[in-house]
Amino acid sequence: MKKTIPLQKRGIPASRLVLGCMGFGGGWNRNPVTADDLKQAHAAVETALAAGITMFDHADIYAYGKAEQVFGQVLRERPGLREQMVLQSKCGIRFDEGTGRPARYDFSAEHILSSVDGILSRLGVESLDILLLHRPDPLMEPEEVADAFSKLKQAGKVKGFGVSNMSPAQIRFLQSHLDAPLLVNQLELNLAKLDWLEAGVLVNQQEGAEVSFPEGTIEFCWMEQIQIQAWSPLAKGVFTGREPENQPESVRLTAALVREMAERKGTAPEAIVLAWLMRHPAGIQPVLGTIRPERIQASAEALQVSLSREEWYSLYVSSRGRKMP
Image 1 (cartoon, rainbow, N blue to C red):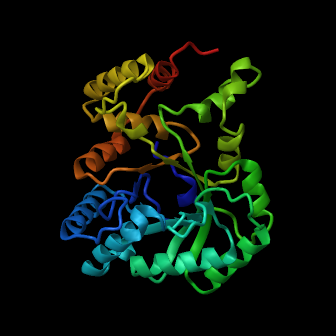
Image 2: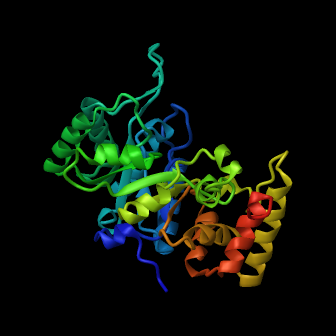
Image 3: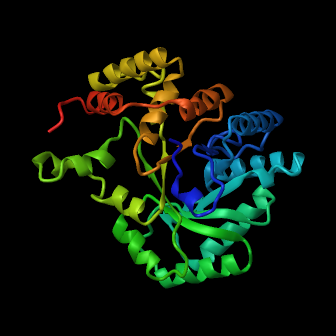
């Protein structure tokens, strides 16, 4: 049965997978965007769209703004492409900027408003479909955020809002000052980082004291129809061919299990890892961190993969490296 995810239930034509654009623009440096960077961006966008991926995730800081800049150039060179997409970006992280000021998070109305103007200018579009607050700001004043959101919506610059890396308590606190529901919570979820599952499985277990993920986050977002998006859903490729040194045995064994399942189902290892996330009934939406066409295509195969309960648990138990409690 095809899963209808929360964004779709809200009438937003979001694809089941999202292409994350952090790798656009030639990397984290101040070099100008090159013709090769633009060519690579075109190839990634074309591959994504051909695979049915129509939602694209940005942030104002990615490649120091060059990711949005080169994406905007792609849109300018292909008129009409914007109408085929759901565009999302994030703001709230500020670097030290070489001025002696510290790296920091900034949810001030002034910064949110100026960030969105910069995002729209780099992308060359009139509005964003969704704006996320990137990481929790301890100095957040929710009334100020609400005022900024209201101004952006009234000006037609942003249609909807969400957050990233927030707990249920933080979301409820912010939501209590907003006049429209938050749409998204983007979190690090993957087959290697299992705290999001362990927080529930280890309730009333001593091991649960070691879990850092806020208990109830998945359930809260699910109940409130807040779209859970997974950043780094492929766990930096540790199960799909990347072989960094000093990986624990559980990672090596799980990578072998992923390969075996992929071969048995006639698909790519990336598809197995993503299908594992999407098997969760909360309707998790993976945000792919690659811009390589072959990996985008391999990831898109997840849309055709079905995992049984037993297959899902086989991967989970293998990755956690110990029996279920």
